[in-house]
Length: 267
Image 1 (cartoon, one colour):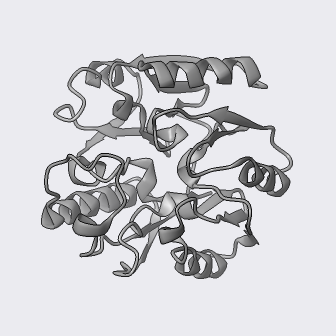
Image 2 (tube, helix red, strand yellow):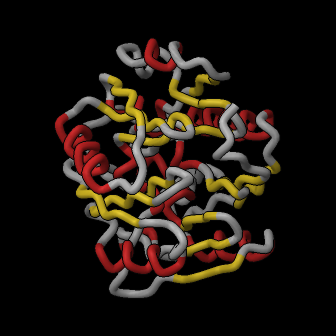
């Protein structure tokens, strides 16, 4: 069983009715989003977290913020510290208020980010040993510097992100010492940079579809996308000798949402 990535709580947020029409998205040429299906998939996600032993705090959906379901971007939590981010897209600023209140109630020590720094939590890959933080359209060097100040006991490395929205759009941890990485050129380029800058050595599992490289490790279980959504990659997960759960995320993926986007975990 994984000795890292052990959690007791999670924070999530509901799916607002405003999401299908107004959520940010990189690709405007996408199918219509089914709000009903998105909410059903999100409920299954939350139920899965509960089945893995987590107490879940659910924030109410905020119709003024269509992207509010993507709570990962709003805060970075490590041990008893929480950094409330300054989100990289101006339309999302304001989402952090509800998260700050929730994390304060859960007893975390709160730090806040201010201009000119910007950072989305989707760019933050924590390995349990160090941070890799994507330099992307949403996260700048000032944001990385602030994160390194708050979590000063860990090495922090900036990693260039090309074409993807976030670093974790193309790689995440899949076990204590193993990172799952998409095989696209941008993903492999970022992985090469990680290998060159890392303070520790990591194994790599490469998957054909970049979206398959976003998964969760929760209390010894790997949660990844269903085979219908990652048909070329699912066999890579089935080869892992650990408990696994498959979840569908087809609707929120249409607005760039990944599995990690939907929760913040607390040790």
